Image (tube, rainbow, N blue to C red):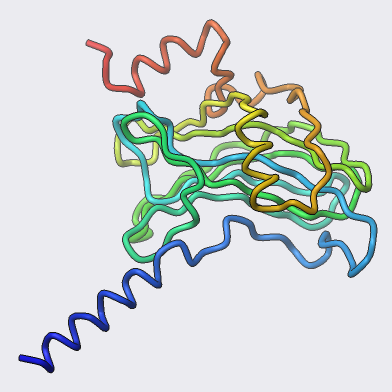
Length: 217
């Protein structure tokens, strides 16, 4: 019995230690700032919408340098053993991961999204779009809160976008006190990513919210 008890404790420890072990960001080396080099920061939250009826194990925002260059991504991974940090919990199912991307200054664009299940059976992207971002050195840019919800488990999903700079500035101050104050970026051409990126306050988002929450009859 002591052997089984010790084995159980060891497995429990590994399970707990394995959670929250993944980084929410992935950045190509070509666009990472050099040590002590000029740096811009891109900040936001990616996660699951509080009223979502369905969501997948991973949802990501995809970013790239304009004019050809490196790419980066910000994700929330929500699995039993492999998770990104749950910095935000709200509503019935809402969770969010704060991401802070250190990047070389320059011109970038949000160009796609990715939704997938942990077993790899379901992965979905859409045609590329372009939401431009101009990043200057020494500044931290806040692009908002991106929360995913799905029509079903076949990755027919969308991000609902909003801003909560007061909440997220407090998170950044706590986790990354070295960053300058956040500067909010109003995302241009968000309508070009419709319906995969929805402005939470737009009139056309109301119908989608009703459907994605499972309240549509």
